Length: 427
Image (tube, rainbow, N blue to C red; front, side):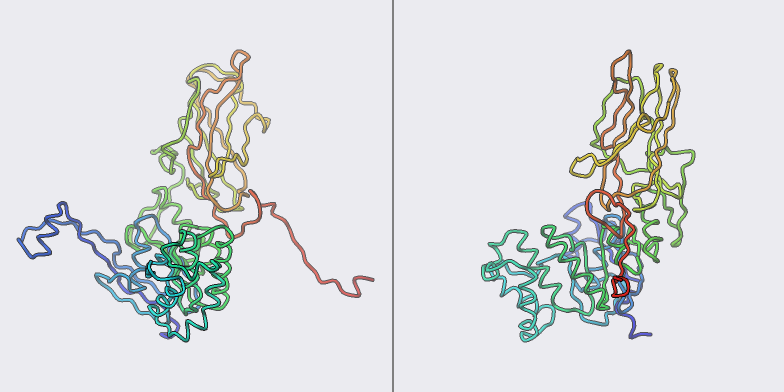
């Protein structure tokens, strides 16, 4: 029914004109000349979607797919080139935090300024003031001019204003990871509180773990078009294929490719162009990749699911029992875990020049959600001396998608039981 729709987007397009020369832009502005050359760029192209009241909907996509553009049109920051947007409810938007702040005003003055811009009366802002100040937690700085704030204090106050206005519809664009870790935790708790209250939430994020955890439904955009909509796991799987160029778009359908002939495996991965490598040259990693449980080559793995790192090594000399290794670091460079054929008691035998060895390392993904870097190694003992034949440091990343993170680097997968003790059980 109509009253159940909080946001309706119908055939929305946003077109920008791209000029090769600045003077062509000026000529068009002044209506001079007829042969003005420009190209049309569709930031959004005929996108339609609905968000029901009380629903949390996520929007994902690669950079430049139109995610922020559609939010800005919904919130009135941008005007569409075509299409319609219908909103039923009062919106608070976490887009460009502090965009409406006056740097010459104090924090308190900016609270009232922003509240008024959103549509609240002074009395309504008075009623929310203590909640805003408590959430921001910047002390007496709230009475100082905003231009004296650190960047951390600025975003804390801006977030506190937007999140405590008590909207019916909350629009969030990559705004939950602001401030220090404790403030981020407070932001997520407030977000969860909104969800429990049955607020309508439209949520854009690159954090696929948060998308999976919080969203009832997910929309996938690519190059300004909607190419998928559905349950979080289904759409995240589509997005993983988009990231590595394995999604063919034809009228909102997708065809996945598995490991097969043609391209090298690594051509289907996002690789680190700045990785380090060295070695004696007696062997070389010709190809490598990671793939998920379905056999799809990907940089994104769901926590709790099995995945495989697959390697192809070519040898240029006879080597006895080469050792093949895989290790995983976090983004700070700490080596989290790793293994090799020697640790796993795998005998690789003696190679001949021209031999190609394929090794697979299959395991469950129990690391916490986040970003990790993969390193590969082929080492061994040559004439009694330890020799690095080929080593690739941080050659590709793995994004672990999780809807439940515990403390530390990995999840112990604990089985937890809780029961109430009664007088009967005490006896």
